Length: 357
Image 1 (cartoon, rainbow, N blue to C red):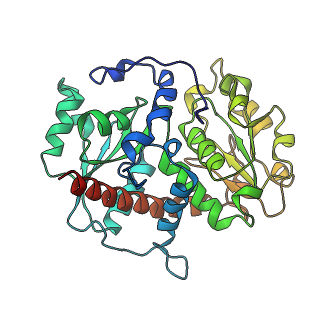
Image 2 (tube, helix red, strand yellow; image 1 turned 180 degrees about the horizontal axis):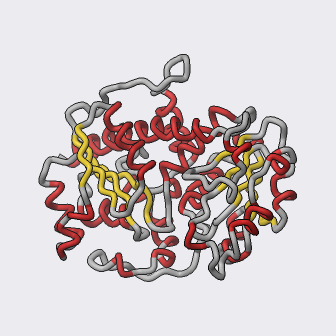
Protein backbone atom coordinates (compact mmCIF):
# COMPACT_ATOMS: atom_id res chain seq x y z
CA UNK A 1 0.00 0.00 0.00
CA UNK A 2 1.24 3.50 -0.76
CA UNK A 3 2.21 5.75 2.12
CA UNK A 4 0.21 8.54 0.51
CA UNK A 5 -2.52 9.88 2.77
CA UNK A 6 -4.97 10.11 -0.11
CA UNK A 7 -5.31 6.81 -1.98
CA UNK A 8 -8.35 7.50 -4.11
CA UNK A 9 -8.21 6.15 -7.64
CA UNK A 10 -6.51 8.43 -10.15
CA UNK A 11 -6.79 9.27 -13.80
CA UNK A 12 -4.03 9.05 -16.36
CA UNK A 13 -2.55 12.53 -16.57
CA UNK A 14 -1.68 13.90 -19.99
CA UNK A 15 1.62 15.80 -19.83
CA UNK A 16 0.15 18.63 -21.87
CA UNK A 17 -2.74 19.40 -19.54
CA UNK A 18 -1.80 17.93 -16.15
CA UNK A 19 -2.26 21.31 -14.47
CA UNK A 20 -6.01 21.11 -15.16
CA UNK A 21 -6.39 18.22 -12.73
CA UNK A 22 -7.40 18.67 -9.12
CA UNK A 23 -4.09 18.14 -7.27
CA UNK A 24 -5.78 15.85 -4.78
CA UNK A 25 -6.68 13.29 -7.46
CA UNK A 26 -3.19 12.20 -8.51
CA UNK A 27 -1.33 11.51 -5.25
CA UNK A 28 -1.55 7.75 -5.59
CA UNK A 29 -0.24 7.79 -9.15
CA UNK A 30 2.64 10.02 -8.10
CA UNK A 31 3.62 8.05 -5.02
CA UNK A 32 3.56 4.73 -6.85
CA UNK A 33 5.83 6.04 -9.59
CA UNK A 34 8.16 8.43 -7.76
CA UNK A 35 11.01 5.96 -7.46
CA UNK A 36 11.20 5.50 -11.25
CA UNK A 37 12.40 8.94 -12.38
CA UNK A 38 14.24 10.05 -9.27
CA UNK A 39 16.65 7.12 -8.89
CA UNK A 40 19.45 5.68 -10.97
CA UNK A 41 19.73 1.92 -11.39
CA UNK A 42 22.18 1.76 -8.47
CA UNK A 43 19.68 3.53 -6.17
CA UNK A 44 21.45 6.89 -6.17
CA UNK A 45 19.33 10.05 -6.34
CA UNK A 46 19.05 11.75 -9.70
CA UNK A 47 16.01 13.92 -8.95
CA UNK A 48 14.41 14.61 -5.57
CA UNK A 49 10.65 14.49 -6.08
CA UNK A 50 9.29 12.94 -2.91
CA UNK A 51 10.28 10.84 0.07
CA UNK A 52 7.64 8.26 -0.89
CA UNK A 53 9.86 6.85 -3.59
CA UNK A 54 12.83 6.29 -1.27
CA UNK A 55 13.68 3.51 1.17
CA UNK A 56 15.14 3.77 4.66
CA UNK A 57 18.78 3.53 3.53
CA UNK A 58 18.24 6.31 0.99
CA UNK A 59 16.66 8.63 3.56
CA UNK A 60 19.49 7.86 5.96
CA UNK A 61 22.00 8.69 3.21
CA UNK A 62 20.43 12.14 2.79
CA UNK A 63 20.62 12.73 6.55
CA UNK A 64 24.24 11.54 6.62
CA UNK A 65 25.14 13.85 3.73
CA UNK A 66 23.49 16.79 5.49
CA UNK A 67 25.56 16.06 8.60
CA UNK A 68 28.76 16.63 6.59
CA UNK A 69 27.84 20.28 6.19
CA UNK A 70 28.16 20.95 9.94
CA UNK A 71 31.47 21.54 11.70
CA UNK A 72 32.36 20.15 15.12
CA UNK A 73 30.55 23.09 16.76
CA UNK A 74 27.34 22.49 14.85
CA UNK A 75 27.88 25.45 12.52
CA UNK A 76 27.15 25.23 8.81
CA UNK A 77 30.16 25.19 6.51
CA UNK A 78 30.56 26.04 2.84
CA UNK A 79 31.70 23.42 0.38
CA UNK A 80 31.96 24.19 -3.37
CA UNK A 81 30.43 20.93 -4.59
CA UNK A 82 28.32 22.75 -7.20
CA UNK A 83 30.97 25.18 -8.37
CA UNK A 84 30.54 25.76 -12.10
CA UNK A 85 26.93 24.53 -12.10
CA UNK A 86 23.80 26.66 -12.55
CA UNK A 87 20.70 26.30 -10.39
CA UNK A 88 17.43 27.94 -11.40
CA UNK A 89 14.77 28.51 -8.73
CA UNK A 90 11.38 28.24 -10.43
CA UNK A 91 8.75 29.21 -7.89
CA UNK A 92 5.33 29.26 -9.55
CA UNK A 93 3.75 30.11 -6.20
CA UNK A 94 5.17 32.38 -3.48
CA UNK A 95 7.36 31.09 -0.68
CA UNK A 96 9.83 33.34 1.07
CA UNK A 97 11.26 30.82 3.53
CA UNK A 98 11.74 27.83 1.24
CA UNK A 99 13.09 29.92 -1.62
CA UNK A 100 15.50 31.79 0.64
CA UNK A 101 16.90 28.66 2.29
CA UNK A 102 17.35 27.01 -1.10
CA UNK A 103 19.22 30.06 -2.35
CA UNK A 104 21.46 30.08 0.73
CA UNK A 105 22.12 26.35 0.26
CA UNK A 106 22.96 26.82 -3.42
CA UNK A 107 25.39 29.64 -2.75
CA UNK A 108 27.07 27.73 0.07
CA UNK A 109 27.70 24.99 -2.49
CA UNK A 110 29.24 27.50 -4.89
CA UNK A 111 26.55 27.31 -7.57
CA UNK A 112 25.52 30.03 -9.99
CA UNK A 113 22.00 30.91 -8.81
CA UNK A 114 19.19 32.36 -10.93
CA UNK A 115 15.78 33.23 -9.49
CA UNK A 116 13.27 33.23 -12.35
CA UNK A 117 10.50 35.82 -12.04
CA UNK A 118 7.57 33.56 -12.84
CA UNK A 119 5.04 36.39 -12.47
CA UNK A 120 6.62 38.02 -15.54
CA UNK A 121 7.58 34.84 -17.36
CA UNK A 122 6.28 33.65 -20.70
CA UNK A 123 3.87 31.24 -19.00
CA UNK A 124 1.86 34.31 -18.01
CA UNK A 125 1.78 35.31 -21.67
CA UNK A 126 0.37 32.02 -22.87
CA UNK A 127 3.52 29.99 -23.50
CA UNK A 128 3.23 26.37 -22.41
CA UNK A 129 5.13 25.18 -19.37
CA UNK A 130 6.93 22.68 -21.59
CA UNK A 131 8.28 25.41 -23.92
CA UNK A 132 9.26 27.61 -20.99
CA UNK A 133 11.26 24.78 -19.44
CA UNK A 134 12.99 23.90 -22.70
CA UNK A 135 14.05 27.53 -23.09
CA UNK A 136 15.41 27.61 -19.55
CA UNK A 137 17.23 24.33 -20.15
CA UNK A 138 18.90 25.88 -23.19
CA UNK A 139 20.42 28.49 -20.89
CA UNK A 140 22.83 25.80 -19.58
CA UNK A 141 20.85 25.08 -16.43
CA UNK A 142 21.90 22.03 -14.41
CA UNK A 143 19.27 22.00 -11.63
CA UNK A 144 15.69 23.27 -11.41
CA UNK A 145 14.25 23.83 -7.93
CA UNK A 146 10.50 23.86 -8.51
CA UNK A 147 7.53 24.94 -6.43
CA UNK A 148 4.16 24.66 -8.12
CA UNK A 149 0.51 24.75 -7.07
CA UNK A 150 -0.25 21.60 -9.07
CA UNK A 151 0.47 18.18 -7.62
CA UNK A 152 2.86 16.39 -9.92
CA UNK A 153 4.58 19.42 -11.45
CA UNK A 154 8.11 18.32 -10.50
CA UNK A 155 7.36 14.73 -11.53
CA UNK A 156 6.08 15.97 -14.90
CA UNK A 157 9.25 17.96 -15.49
CA UNK A 158 11.53 15.06 -14.55
CA UNK A 159 9.77 12.51 -16.73
CA UNK A 160 8.27 14.41 -19.65
CA UNK A 161 10.17 17.63 -20.24
CA UNK A 162 13.68 18.00 -18.82
CA UNK A 163 14.90 14.58 -17.63
CA UNK A 164 18.55 15.63 -18.00
CA UNK A 165 18.11 18.50 -15.56
CA UNK A 166 18.19 17.52 -11.88
CA UNK A 167 14.71 18.41 -10.56
CA UNK A 168 14.25 19.25 -6.88
CA UNK A 169 10.67 19.43 -5.62
CA UNK A 170 10.22 22.53 -3.47
CA UNK A 171 6.55 21.70 -2.87
CA UNK A 172 3.79 20.62 -5.27
CA UNK A 173 0.15 21.29 -4.56
CA UNK A 174 -1.15 19.29 -1.61
CA UNK A 175 1.03 16.36 -2.60
CA UNK A 176 4.49 16.68 -1.08
CA UNK A 177 7.13 18.95 0.41
CA UNK A 178 10.04 16.50 0.58
CA UNK A 179 12.84 18.84 1.65
CA UNK A 180 10.67 20.08 4.54
CA UNK A 181 9.99 16.47 5.47
CA UNK A 182 13.70 15.67 5.42
CA UNK A 183 14.74 18.74 7.39
CA UNK A 184 12.24 17.64 10.01
CA UNK A 185 13.84 14.18 10.01
CA UNK A 186 17.31 15.72 10.34
CA UNK A 187 16.09 17.82 13.26
CA UNK A 188 14.66 14.78 15.03
CA UNK A 189 17.83 12.82 14.28
CA UNK A 190 20.02 15.56 15.78
CA UNK A 191 17.83 16.60 18.71
CA UNK A 192 15.72 13.66 19.89
CA UNK A 193 17.22 11.61 22.75
CA UNK A 194 15.99 8.32 21.28
CA UNK A 195 16.22 6.69 17.83
CA UNK A 196 13.34 6.89 15.36
CA UNK A 197 12.20 3.36 16.16
CA UNK A 198 11.50 4.31 19.80
CA UNK A 199 9.70 7.61 19.22
CA UNK A 200 6.10 8.71 19.55
CA UNK A 201 5.30 11.64 17.26
CA UNK A 202 2.16 13.79 17.37
CA UNK A 203 1.21 15.94 14.37
CA UNK A 204 -1.33 18.66 15.11
CA UNK A 205 -3.22 20.82 12.63
CA UNK A 206 -4.52 20.92 9.08
CA UNK A 207 -3.51 17.43 7.96
CA UNK A 208 -5.93 17.43 5.02
CA UNK A 209 -4.36 20.31 3.11
CA UNK A 210 -0.76 19.91 4.29
CA UNK A 211 1.92 18.63 1.92
CA UNK A 212 4.29 18.90 4.89
CA UNK A 213 2.21 16.39 6.86
CA UNK A 214 2.19 13.99 3.92
CA UNK A 215 5.97 14.07 3.57
CA UNK A 216 6.55 13.90 7.32
CA UNK A 217 4.26 10.90 7.82
CA UNK A 218 5.84 9.02 4.95
CA UNK A 219 9.40 9.77 6.11
CA UNK A 220 8.63 8.86 9.72
CA UNK A 221 7.14 5.53 8.65
CA UNK A 222 10.10 4.75 6.40
CA UNK A 223 12.57 5.56 9.19
CA UNK A 224 10.81 3.18 11.56
CA UNK A 225 8.55 5.31 13.76
CA UNK A 226 5.74 3.03 14.88
CA UNK A 227 3.67 5.51 16.92
CA UNK A 228 2.49 8.38 14.71
CA UNK A 229 -0.47 10.31 16.07
CA UNK A 230 -2.55 12.99 14.38
CA UNK A 231 -5.04 15.41 15.87
CA UNK A 232 -7.19 17.98 14.09
CA UNK A 233 -10.79 19.02 13.62
CA UNK A 234 -12.58 16.36 11.58
CA UNK A 235 -13.00 18.91 8.77
CA UNK A 236 -9.21 19.12 8.49
CA UNK A 237 -8.50 15.37 8.42
CA UNK A 238 -8.39 13.34 5.19
CA UNK A 239 -11.09 10.71 5.04
CA UNK A 240 -9.79 7.29 6.02
CA UNK A 241 -6.43 8.54 7.25
CA UNK A 242 -6.31 5.67 9.76
CA UNK A 243 -5.49 3.30 6.90
CA UNK A 244 -2.05 4.83 6.59
CA UNK A 245 -0.57 3.73 9.86
CA UNK A 246 -1.46 6.69 12.06
CA UNK A 247 -3.60 6.93 15.16
CA UNK A 248 -6.30 9.60 15.09
CA UNK A 249 -7.07 11.47 18.30
CA UNK A 250 -10.03 13.75 18.85
CA UNK A 251 -8.69 15.12 22.12
CA UNK A 252 -5.34 16.87 21.87
CA UNK A 253 -4.42 16.23 25.49
CA UNK A 254 -4.66 12.50 24.85
CA UNK A 255 -2.71 12.86 21.62
CA UNK A 256 0.36 14.55 23.13
CA UNK A 257 0.52 12.57 26.37
CA UNK A 258 3.94 10.86 26.66
CA UNK A 259 4.96 11.98 23.15
CA UNK A 260 8.59 12.55 22.17
CA UNK A 261 7.85 15.03 19.39
CA UNK A 262 4.98 17.50 18.90
CA UNK A 263 4.72 18.89 15.37
CA UNK A 264 2.41 21.81 14.75
CA UNK A 265 1.12 22.67 11.28
CA UNK A 266 0.17 26.04 9.88
CA UNK A 267 -3.51 26.94 9.64
CA UNK A 268 -4.07 28.99 6.50
CA UNK A 269 -6.04 32.15 7.15
CA UNK A 270 -8.61 31.31 4.46
CA UNK A 271 -9.66 28.24 6.47
CA UNK A 272 -10.60 30.38 9.50
CA UNK A 273 -14.23 31.50 9.54
CA UNK A 274 -15.13 28.99 6.84
CA UNK A 275 -17.16 25.79 7.24
CA UNK A 276 -13.83 24.03 7.88
CA UNK A 277 -12.92 26.06 10.95
CA UNK A 278 -15.18 28.25 13.02
CA UNK A 279 -12.63 30.70 14.47
CA UNK A 280 -8.98 31.05 15.42
CA UNK A 281 -9.84 31.29 19.11
CA UNK A 282 -11.86 28.08 18.95
CA UNK A 283 -8.98 26.31 17.20
CA UNK A 284 -6.46 27.52 19.77
CA UNK A 285 -8.73 26.41 22.60
CA UNK A 286 -8.87 22.82 21.36
CA UNK A 287 -5.69 22.38 19.30
CA UNK A 288 -3.23 25.10 20.24
CA UNK A 289 0.22 23.93 21.40
CA UNK A 290 0.29 25.44 24.87
CA UNK A 291 2.68 25.04 27.77
CA UNK A 292 0.06 22.99 29.61
CA UNK A 293 -0.19 20.53 26.73
CA UNK A 294 3.56 20.32 26.21
CA UNK A 295 3.81 19.40 29.91
CA UNK A 296 1.77 16.27 29.15
CA UNK A 297 4.47 15.04 26.76
CA UNK A 298 7.77 13.56 27.87
CA UNK A 299 10.01 16.02 29.75
CA UNK A 300 12.53 16.05 26.89
CA UNK A 301 9.93 16.26 24.11
CA UNK A 302 10.69 18.41 21.07
CA UNK A 303 8.30 21.06 19.75
CA UNK A 304 8.43 21.61 15.99
CA UNK A 305 6.66 23.78 13.41
CA UNK A 306 7.39 24.24 9.68
CA UNK A 307 6.63 27.97 9.79
CA UNK A 308 5.48 30.56 9.36
CA UNK A 309 3.79 30.31 12.75
CA UNK A 310 0.52 31.91 13.76
CA UNK A 311 1.21 32.66 17.41
CA UNK A 312 -1.87 32.42 19.58
CA UNK A 313 -3.59 30.24 16.97
CA UNK A 314 -1.40 27.18 16.41
CA UNK A 315 1.13 27.71 19.16
CA UNK A 316 1.68 29.83 22.26
CA UNK A 317 4.58 32.28 22.12
CA UNK A 318 5.94 30.86 25.38
CA UNK A 319 6.20 27.45 23.70
CA UNK A 320 7.54 28.71 20.37
CA UNK A 321 10.32 30.55 22.19
CA UNK A 322 10.72 27.99 24.97
CA UNK A 323 13.48 25.57 25.84
CA UNK A 324 11.85 22.60 24.12
CA UNK A 325 11.30 24.40 20.84
CA UNK A 326 13.61 23.42 17.96
CA UNK A 327 11.85 25.63 15.41
CA UNK A 328 14.87 27.82 14.68
CA UNK A 329 17.04 24.72 14.44
CA UNK A 330 14.64 23.43 11.79
CA UNK A 331 15.40 26.51 9.70
CA UNK A 332 19.15 25.96 10.02
CA UNK A 333 18.78 22.25 9.32
CA UNK A 334 16.76 23.13 6.24
CA UNK A 335 19.84 24.69 4.68
CA UNK A 336 21.92 21.55 5.37
CA UNK A 337 19.25 19.22 3.96
CA UNK A 338 18.84 21.33 0.84
CA UNK A 339 22.61 21.38 0.38
CA UNK A 340 22.59 17.59 0.69
CA UNK A 341 19.76 17.03 -1.78
CA UNK A 342 21.20 19.47 -4.33
CA UNK A 343 24.63 17.86 -4.12
CA UNK A 344 23.37 14.26 -4.28
CA UNK A 345 20.98 14.96 -7.15
CA UNK A 346 23.67 16.66 -9.22
CA UNK A 347 26.08 13.81 -8.53
CA UNK A 348 23.43 11.28 -9.55
CA UNK A 349 22.47 13.25 -12.65
CA UNK A 350 26.11 13.39 -13.77
CA UNK A 351 26.43 9.62 -13.26
CA UNK A 352 23.24 9.01 -15.25
CA UNK A 353 24.39 11.15 -18.14
CA UNK A 354 27.82 9.48 -18.18
CA UNK A 355 26.21 6.02 -18.26
CA UNK A 356 23.92 7.05 -21.11
CA UNK A 357 26.75 8.08 -23.44
